[in-house]
Length: 107
Image 1 (tube, rainbow, N blue to C red):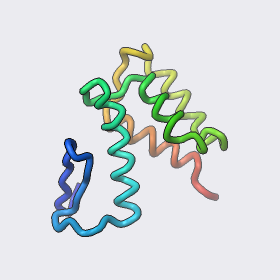
Image 2: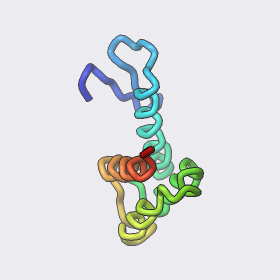
Image 3: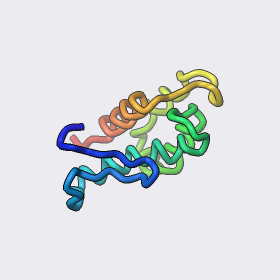
Image 4: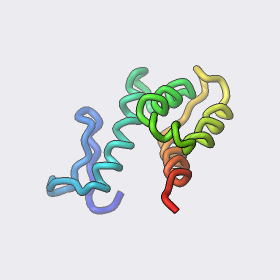
């Protein structure tokens, strides 16, 4: 990311170069990143399995599921392959979260 961002995985924190308080949007981005690492760290790895992604969606996006925003996300998880072996790397996770957000945007 531009603007001198530093990602400190061991502290699960993103901080602009001057460490001023993050804006709401920056906090939201930090949360999305941290959730990936939180669930991937369970296995000390840099990816999520489909089962881990489904667990993240159920635990962290329960309200989106109720309004059917996550339906396409569920379909994508199903298409990933073996639920315990397939690998979802961060870029794919980011794309899936973006797709979930697009499905829920206000019209």
